[in-house]
Length: 184
Image 1 (cartoon, rainbow, N blue to C red):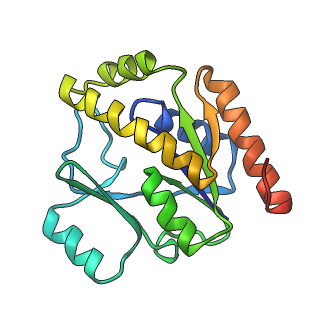
Image 2: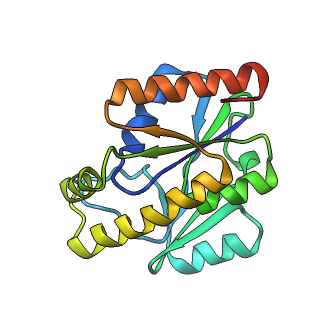
């Protein structure tokens, strides 16, 4: 099973992913490629950081299940067959547009949209992680469009106002999907 976890910047997707992985040994996290620079304090394994030429060569060879662009930076998820353990469920932490691309390939994908409790909380979280003000406002603007697209695509929406409750809800959705292929 493929699980897509999306949401605007600053809603805590990375923290939620860490908790899910710690709780469930049957989930493997896909490591996306990006051309963006590594953030201060960001671990080397957060992404596969590459230059634009390397990314484009992999893209043209059909090496991604989905790709996206934010500003001048590219992001891409390697094909599931290239990601290791085929016995585990695969978790993709990607943009909503990427979720659409994955759903086009695998209609049985579980789409989960994590959101902040408010725009002011989203802004505060983005600033706390060190984003510059222009980037904060860009992420908030992109988030508004992502919310609309996620609803159109049928994403399950989970508010990250309490981390443990949020992770519990996502875990419940995953288990429902595993048991009968449906959620909701």
